[in-house]
Image (cartoon, rainbow, N blue to C red; front, side):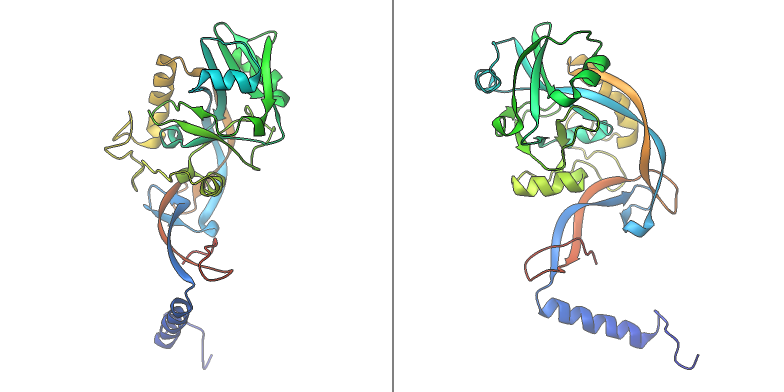
Length: 285
């Protein structure tokens, strides 16, 4: 009681500044740009301890990403030339599609190409049956396939950009659900950010602190991300890129103060390296 621990004690605050000065002198403080939990109501980043998980219904969609070079894609997949060759991604966050910068596959996973009319669609073989069911196809007409690592580097056309994006390889790709092809937006997910750094992908963030797309964002400028999902789905359908749309109930991060859903959003942050000088870690000031 004679000498209480008080965070607002001036001596304690002075000690914090002194320690921070030592950290800076030793080269451990870094300014970085990476995705963090972001509350659209607080308009600020949240620490892990400030995040709660609650059930939320999202829009789960399967989206076709056309191969840019059909000849090269057909050669690697060992398939006949069709009018359209496309890879299929599955996501529960349609609003992140404008920030897409690649698609991740698992290196040693088998992928199969099946025919649907005049188009060939690529998914993981282990997820073929549930994909066919979602797409309303009774029997698969398999016309080609390859290991994920054999497709690395092929370029795809994302739905909302004229910039081609590459197929990359990531350990975070699983066969638990979806298509085995993971839409990758480095500004909106930790796994996406880490794999993006490995492949030197742009960390493109089209979303402002209030949750609305910036004025220069493709197609959906000014719209709020949580209100844009229906518009995104409509445009995908107009462009004949939407293969399935279903409601999906899942556990989702919420702000502990507002009890509202939050997002991952890349922002400038200060970091303290917990390893060695010049390396960033997850320790955030």
